[in-house]
Image (cartoon, rainbow, N blue to C red; front, side, top):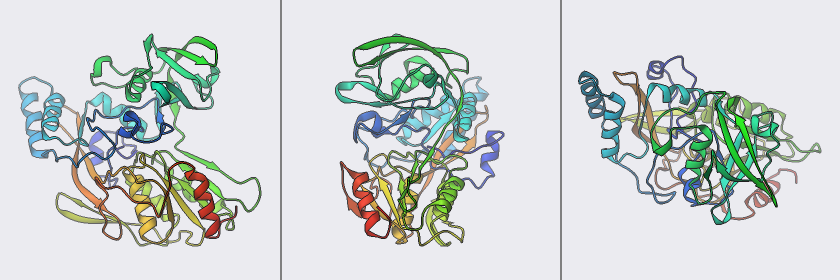
Length: 406
């Protein structure tokens, strides 16, 4: 997801240092297609771009030509047509599956999401067995929680439209109130109603909730009950402030228990926040290199991180983009052991620019590499310890073996 950034208006992004790796969602392609564990979660208030990839590791796509996109948009505006639509047509023809075009309304909605804010009902869903859609998480204090909806409840329909057999992304769009039929547009406004048909065991019921503006909780910290157990830090996306939260968790972690950094299902976010998270574990040094239209650049960690705390990183096929950048940096620098399954493989870099009609083009400009020079795009990262089911238990065993408490 394009890294979560907070900007007053789109044009400021062009001047800022906030490099973004685009993933306009907390839902990855794999979650929608079932190419990894059905436990992969997606935020019910966010949608993914329309990507036609048949699996998590689709071939590397072409790159949309920025000049062609801007020419098409400018010509369309001159002709009294939609610049955003003309630009989207160019991107679609290019075959670049990571570039996208936002209307001004969509971009405003996107900015709010990147700042950790969204309009929804506080509900996360996942694909379960036999095409069923289940609630995987409920945000405390949100409309869904107040209505008594809990994890494991089956979501049978949204506004009368059955969910079974429907891609997760489409169900998510219905929950958000996005335009029907695949048309583009921002989510519904706060205060709008959405009716859910639910089932828990033999009980079936219908409830109408009203969407509200909520703050997403992208970092969850589980501290040990005792003084010496491991701290678990689960990051679902790198939004504004994620790096600082990770640094606080590292400072408070038991030096004997170590830390388990869970990046499973993390679909990326602001690269700047991923670098700040890396800085919590490194004493300066290289985090990644990347190219922007042929110009080579580098990202460095700040000095002063905790280099002694035992660290294990958990990844899977839903670990993408900025999360892969962080995992690769800690792995290459010898700072952590990585446990789990091969990551998604999204290492392309997108940067935004404003088009004549106020819409915003997020276009691919290059690719990044890990500190050792490994490319991630289309390849992903291979963990040090490869494991499918029971990955967290294995990760805790590994952590104990490198000095972290059980």
